Length: 216
Image (cartoon, rainbow, N blue to C red; front, side, top):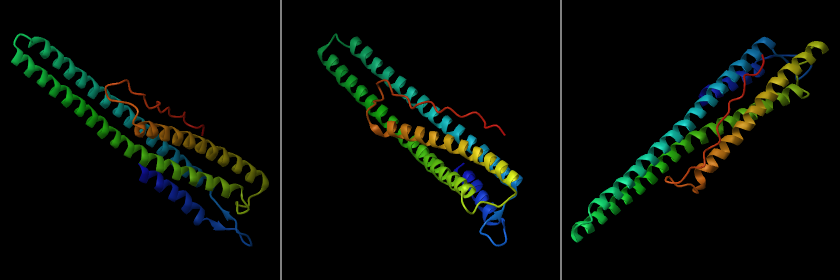
């Protein structure tokens, strides 16, 4: 998915690089319909990437919940076995040792499960955050080019209409991406903070709410 976004950005960049130059200026003529089509493809790719990130976070929560339930059941089983083996001193001592082993194994298993889960999700979120930040930078660069001295020279009415439409689209993209990057950073901070324990109530990573499709 990251490669898809990079390809879309490369297409936008190529559209600008390969655009026909305006004589006697540094400006270029860009085909509006083709450029807007590329923006639409980028929007669809970003939506797909956001959906995938939401699924990854959801899978992480379900995975951790399952591990917690299994650990609690192991602890309860250890308690039941300890209560059943109290008639003989030697047997009772063995039962205690076994209960401690089960408890230790359950605790270590739960910690390992959480560590593996967080490592997997951290890698996914780090990769996604990098993609989002690259996309934000590309969108900002595109907006700057549209507003800068090198912007395409068109007749005034078409120039104003095109600038307003494209800038509105890019501004919406930028707002979505900045919010998404902040959400991903908060999720990564919670994963790497080390304050939550598998057997305690987890502080959930905030639910990633996907934005409505922008009006076309």
